[in-house]
Image (cartoon, rainbow, N blue to C red; front, side):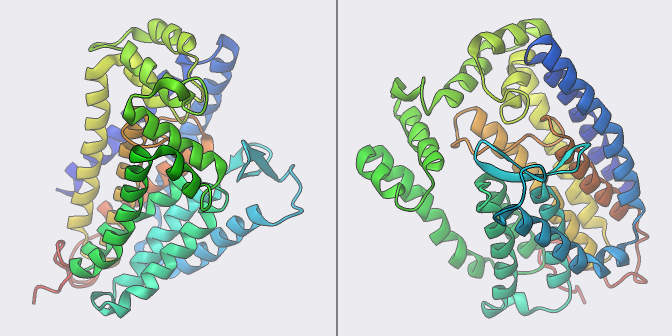
Length: 397
């Protein structure tokens, strides 16, 4: 089953990377699309090398140095927020400070933060059962709040939200009690439901309330999203421009798609912003149609199944939790990106893993995949540690 799980992880990941190269070559003018394609094609082999290295790292070293990696990433996230840091080192883009310039490429610390968080959460939860008590959730909640807090102030709300499904699944896999999780999740889920409901019923009053707690661009995204849900087109050429153009590009693909040249023309005529990264799923649908969209989502589902099978086969509980965290992070990111493109969720700037343009993201994602492969190749048996039941994290004896 281990080899089958590895195939389910590696084959979809490689196919998605190739689809990403095709989509990136489709958008923009000829010179720009070629430059983006060359850069992405340069980073893909680096990602594969990174995956190979990550797969060779012994499990005990991942566990031993998780704290060190966490401190390093926290330092990088704090560096982004420090006033006075020269723009030659920290490059603001669209008002966000998310990237550190390393001359050859820009490093996005929030990508590394996801890896560090998965390792730290697994290290925190794999031994002991404190997290099965309500008071024992304070440490994992605190760790998640620190990671999410440092990222959300960049600002990067989209990446921060990805910690929520990963937090839930990793705690359930570790044996956390669902009723305790619901005490945190139900109030947290009610907040956006009430906000969106209020915006639908009383848009002006809801916008005024949101302006008191959110940044202007975040308010604009929610206002545009709720207007789209109401069928109100007045923001389509303003704050709802990107969402409207994404739907237009997506619809142009029909059932079987327009092909590369047709998709390039459709995306160019639609004026879709950030088509090579934040909206790349729309490019894929325009190019390959609804059937292609089903195939792409199916590849992520296959990847998710492979990742969970690797988790299920891990004899060491630490490795199992790492596999669950990484798998959930990547699959939930893909689903959120597709949902944003299709107008099911507000746009938050989340990229499509392995497909969207970005060297830092591509290399980091392949590194996470390498960790999964390494876990699949870890020898099984009691010499690692006693096997835990996947569903509840309890020792079967």
